[in-house]
Image (cartoon, rainbow, N blue to C red; front, side):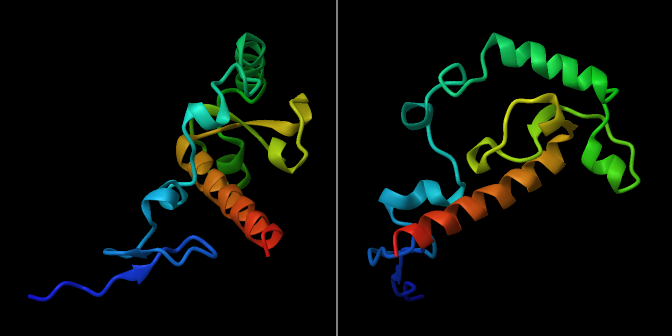
Length: 127
């Protein structure tokens, strides 16, 4: 069976051809929307040190350990994380009013939406 024809990398503005649909080696991290600690800094460098650990525990207790996103939808789900309602990258703060307990599925969905918005902003800024 013949091989599929190469396609351009899906990263905006990249014309590198790839054998499979997706991203070239330089942009393959765009597929998952994350960067290694070497590029973004470890959790302490990003502001998630021991103070954040104390804040996280306080917010989980405040929200009774329940996912606030699910509660707004009428479901009761155990929270696994604490999330910024308005992401720090979009001007959010670590104030308690901007933090919510959230379950892993809701957090993954919300993070994917935020990453997509960040990629759109980056693409609009490079035009």
